[in-house]
Image (tube, rainbow, N blue to C red; front, side, top):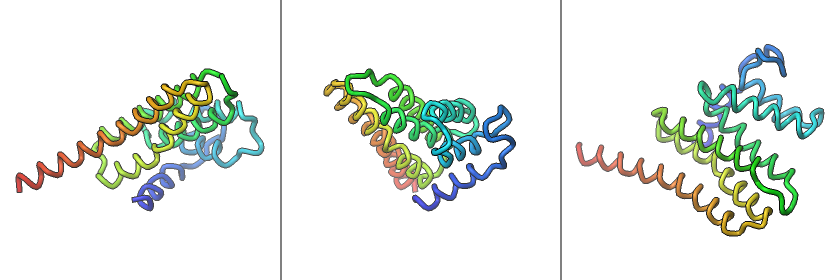
Length: 169
């Protein structure tokens, strides 16, 4: 599971760099720059780069968009102050759920779907923590449970599909 997902993600990230920050850079290259080049970038540059990765990869490489969205949610959470509205974290989380939905609908194998769901686990917790930091305990519980329901719903669909296959055999 995790090994296959890591191998697929490393293939996505192994694209050649055309220009690390230019418009011609590929999404995987931009994600690699954002993830590995932390020391030489300001937090705002890094957030901008992660947003660019999400926008440029959402349609064609949702796995890259998902990885960038998870990282963006955690980076935005790290920058939040107590009492601050969690709008930036919520936007990153929404992008992550949308990317996961594209992966899920892309007819990926059960193992790949499970790996992407594992990748997305941090989305609900980042959203819940952001709501708690903002002072919204109800929102925190709702964010956590909504994330859990999204992931559990997919698992129930997979089980139903498996039962149909077994019942038809």
